[in-house]
Length: 497
Image 1 (cartoon, rainbow, N blue to C red):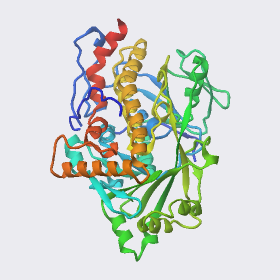
Image 2 (cartoon, rainbow, N blue to C red):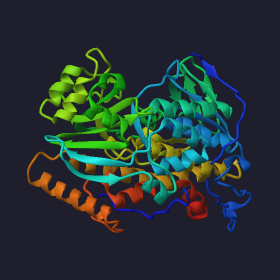
Image 3 (cartoon, rainbow, N blue to C red):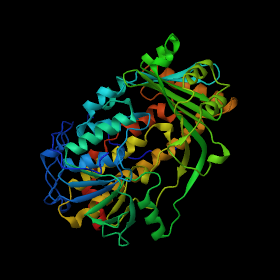
Image 4 (cartoon, rainbow, N blue to C red):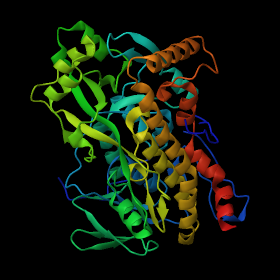
């Protein structure tokens, strides 16, 4: 398991163009005043984290964001709230609502509250009371991990599950309301060879220049590839050996089966663990949809095909899980024979030498694509947005942009890569074949559950790191926006020296 770093606890913690909507006020959570004790903070105003609009950045910047996903939209919201002029360039010709379930952990929800979207998101999300860890073969419960409301009270920020499309829609509407310009059908085909000149070239030959380019362009990031090519290092990925199906089962399909309806209508998530794979399942959209992510060994033809959106088939999926318990088989039988079964391969990406090159900066899946085993992909992209928001709100002139990007990288890179690594460690623990290692894992899960039931502060370490109290503290208990403020002087003065 990666070493734990310094921790900071939360204190609460198809149009071609969409342009110029009226601004709206935000209603986020904690007050913190930026220190001005050293020369590096000269002319930097105090900033109230509960109201980011109250003190605009002293140096409004023209910021170009590539990519209109969760990370890009979150960054656009935060940066707009602090007074910057933001434009997003997206390859697709329309912003469609796609995807399935996604977890919003406390480290993300406290940022989304400050960005003014959490209350709307709560209307769409479900706050699970616990997650049940179960055997693949007989559906027997090995242990459980308590979630809401205890997690919300501990970290002063809630944990919920929500449909990714609902999250993206809420972020999109918020960005538009703040005046973010969103250009669709805008594929990037080149960037300036001089990374200190933040310019991008569109497919139609037009060059766009700003003060900063943020690449939120995903696992196949064009900007990341260009930086790697020009800097002479290999941008590599390695297959994890896993692929995943994701399916959504409608309530209507379950009519008459009370056992299945109990799963749908309850506030309990389920993680079934088995040889070579596992399943994560929980209800969505007011308990009308049941979300399942089914991770399984990759098939030979998939090894070099990294994709989020490859079509699978129900027949292949049923064959893959034919030996699993009757609950799993019954759930999968409700997938329509002609319904959408999306499948994606899971690749591990090597850490990059840097997330920053001149005035180009990577965020989200472009620099730290997360495997799904600890459910932190979207949360860490939102953390990137929170840190960029605070760092760029503190620059006193365009000459200080590099300082802000250094702060961003120091705050985010080591932490993001540690969470990346923990996901790979968790993969191994969840997928033991039946035998000695599996029995030892299950014993430790039972001990961890019993310790949690008794309210033990230290507890026992859970090999499922997503369920482990100490690793939860590392993932969920850090307030990166506050940390950015508190460490600004330290990091920028060190950079100057």
